[in-house]
Length: 112
Length: 114
Image (cartoon, rainbow over all chains, first blue to last red; front, side, top):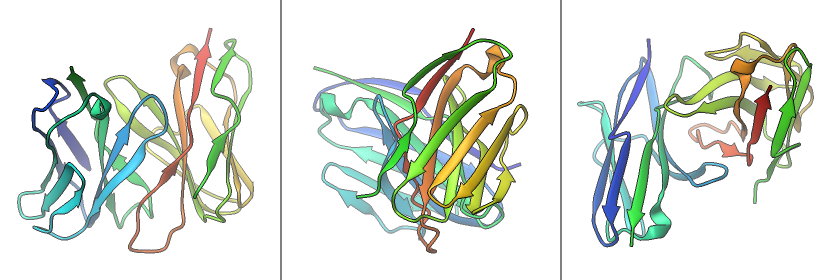
């Protein structure tokens, strides 16, 4: 059975801290791994990773995929209160069309 | 900008009622999805559709059905609502142009079944 496991499930940090969120997976016929940010509304897309070792970056957020060890990390540097959200990791495989298999999410709270 | 809209943000229904949740996307996307999101369980796929009148079961289809009569509209139906279907329901769509798997989400419908 395909699995996507995120850790930690929740995290509280102070503004300015750097955080690392983890996502490990066990899926057959892996295609891509995606990260989403969800505030009190629809999840919004952050990154899609398909190749190992290539960092994707957007402002203070970055992410990388390790297809040998089957995990990805999402880094947020110099955190701000606006980074408080649930961060979702999802994996696509070729067995399920374009359906995504989501992890349970990491709830991040950034305090002033 | 892709827009995915859902018919209601909040809905309260009674046990046994038939419930319709509507989702509309404006980008001519082929693939559409229904998820439910519960604390501690994440997003779980209920049903998806890759074309008009086509549907596939996801991980938790029991108690639900779907309808896709037009490309832009994907409806989730709770035939006889039960309290364990109280949840946040999220609709998503995807163009289906490989290699992109990016799904666009609607704002969600928070359904309470009493």
